[in-house]
Amino acid sequence: MLGGALALVGIFTAWIDPDGASATVMGWDLTSGDKFFKSNDPYLLLGIGIAIIAVGVALFLGKLKPLAKAAAIVAGLAVIGICIRDWTSIADVVKKSPRFDGRNVTAQFGFYLTIAGGVLAIVGGVLPAKKS
Image 1 (spheres, rainbow, N blue to C red):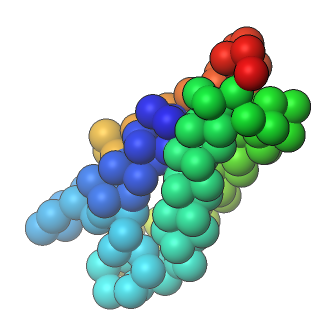
Image 2: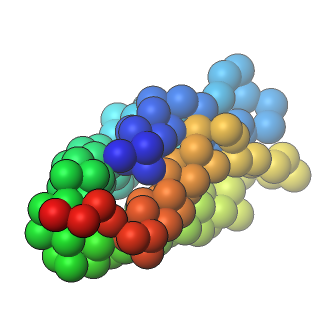
């Protein structure tokens, strides 16, 4: 459940800091494309985060244990994979855009928080669940 919560909180906190820009970009800002580039991944991460919480509740209650454990691992890997894909997209934007000439873009707290949520979901799927 904590992994899902971290993934959800991570979406709504600072993800990237374009060097020389006025403000950091939250993960959710990527849905509009106004501040950096447009991506539908935050919607996907929102859905996966909610699913991880539901799977965590199932594991806590000891329901559908084998299926819930597998779902937690897959969802955690999906969160990490989406974050990696977003970071490679961000790197491509920085390389190709003249507005970032010589400037760096750094990952911020929310980006790492989202990844940590995915890692915790995987850990939750690997650890023993409550006996039913």
